[in-house]
Image 1 (cartoon, one colour):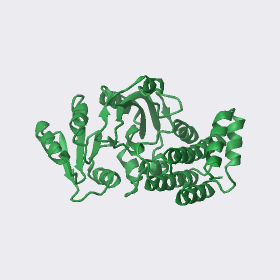
Image 2 (cartoon, helix red, strand yellow):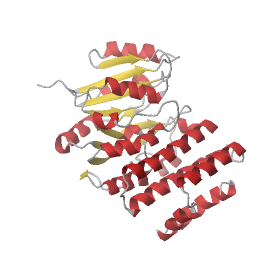
Image 3 (cartoon, helix red, strand yellow):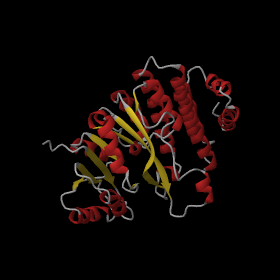
Image 4 (cartoon, one colour):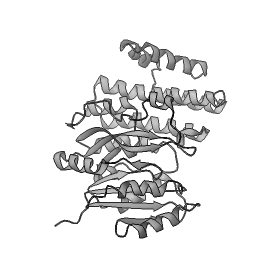
Length: 334
């Protein structure tokens, strides 16, 4: 009988002492034989390292504990965890998030019935003080895919279009064969690394299954990446968008117009959203930022953004086109 785990859950840990115990408990509460859980302490400066050592004693034989001797960032932590994983499929889970009840049994049923290379799941947003506005935004159930659910998909155009239409490219909503993830290492020392790995991951995954159930509770708190503006985050976002755009075009040169538009609109929307965030932070007029936005748009759209906005309008997306165009013009980007 094979001892190869059917799933490796990989959890990078860095300065998450208030959350990591709850994260691990959410996994252990639905434990299934054949799952391995690896936690890597990325040289935390709080009590996270001691906490996961205690968790190792609390759950003997169920956790493998690793450590970086110096802090190297989440991408390096994920890459190190992946190098040590033995499972047929791999699921990256952030140590401040939770695994929703029923996620592991649900995933196991899908893998047994369909054996897809990649499984996409939905998520919900976890807040300390959720309010009515969060409920109205649909934070109780965020969709990660805009295509058909609960079936095995092999149409690459449909997968690209559905994934980009949902605009949720985080790693933790994508459970893939270990070999597929090995073809998509995370770029180190930067933010928005999840976006950049999508072309390689999709190219290595020939069958996809979308389960429209929230399996992850994504925690929003003051330390979350989107909560604070910085020039470095803008730079890293633009680099990842450019790598996504160029990578999809390279890996899937024969994709159809619907998938190409999904790619173009995702990247254009990402640039505009970043510009709006910079404006709210009072930073949009900085010459350094303006130069970065302008140069990125030239690399993304050598013919200019107007053809993409025209496609918005042909689809009846008048307000979206107007909002993006206004944002880019008001901030002096076009």
